[in-house]
Amino acid sequence: MINKVTIIVLILSISISSFSQDQAKIEYRYINLTKQYISSDDNKPKQKTPGYDLQKIIEELPFVLIFDGSKSVFKIEKRMGVGDKSITHNQLTSMLPETYIDYNNNTRYDYTEISGQTFLVKEKLNVNWKITGDIKLIKGYTCKKAIQFDENENIKMEAWFVPDIPLSIGPSYAVGLPGLVIQTKQFNKKGEAYSGFEFVNIDFSKQKEIIIPNHNTITEKEFTDIMKGSRQ
Image (cartoon, rainbow, N blue to C red; front, side, top):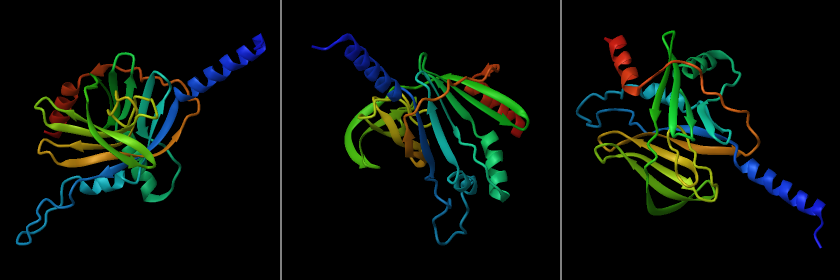
């Protein structure tokens, strides 16, 4: 016969187990898929792809996704360092956006600082995916493939997720799938893959509550117009 103490212990054990699976810290690495040179014709001088060198630097930076159960933040993880690499790291940490996501309303916030100005871009997330029948083993996990399209029905993103880890989260905007996303590819309008992220490690320990920055928000179009105006 099971007594009351046993029942309480069982309930607590189940609660603790469920709670630990609702929070996580995942490390990712950035993958540069952009070709080094624009021209591959041997008869023409090679022209390096704009931004290629910067993307190679970003490949060395540690990215982290922190999930507190209802919100997440995806960002470069700050680490102590010395020398020129540390300076570049710190500069990119402030320039590249921290992406906050509120899963209760499928809204993302990109927080960034450029030329002394701080911006908080707010947009609804695209959580419409097409799950294909493709399956493969990545980092020891059995993964399924999903693709996301842009407004012109071109492939915008490819994601591989793990159904056995029931967290609908992933790097950057790769969220809303029935499992943790451990690998992504981003595509341009020509259908060429130019970047992505790959899973490194996961920690299911309890995380601090994520606070979305308190700042006036703008739309992505407004942010793009501001950037165009500053370049001009």
